[in-house]
Amino acid sequence: MSKIQKNTVATIAYVLKNRKGEILDQAGAEEAFAYLHGHDNVVPGLEKALDGLAVGDKLSVTVSADEGYGDYDPDLVQTVEKSKFPPKMRSVKAGEMLQVDTGAGWSVVTVKEATATHIVIDGNHELAGEDLFFEVEVIALREASPEELEHGHAHGPEGHNHH
Image (cartoon, rainbow, N blue to C red):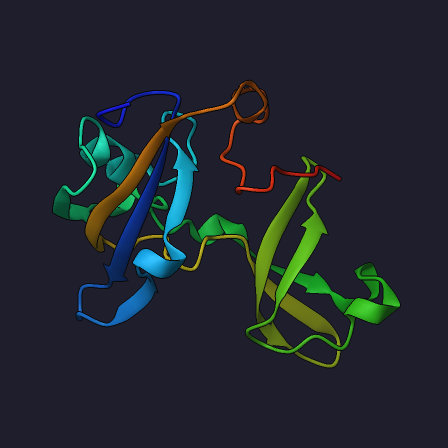
């Protein structure tokens, strides 16, 4: 495997910054991130930019919001009566993340506000509406295993156990 292409497990070191230059996330060579290319394991704009790169290649790329985590959707912010939540979830605080059943499946939401009677939740990704600035280095490449292809994501060196 000499270049990143569909069904390649690519291992990358990266720094992710916002428009202000603040570091939002990073993984150096020691804790590099492995993903299965062509299977939506990373945001679309980054995946497109990495296509065709080889080990040792470095890249600076700006990923627009629409090619990242999407535009911010105000319709994904909802005010819900606390009584609609299970008792153990009623003591949540602003900033906490919850996994909720939306009726269309499970989704992770952020608590924006919690009052005595209501909880305001936001289903947008925390980086929705943000342009993303990546500095990336390709650390390693390998062909995906049949199990990784079946599962749609890279597994670690010891394999992967599903739930």
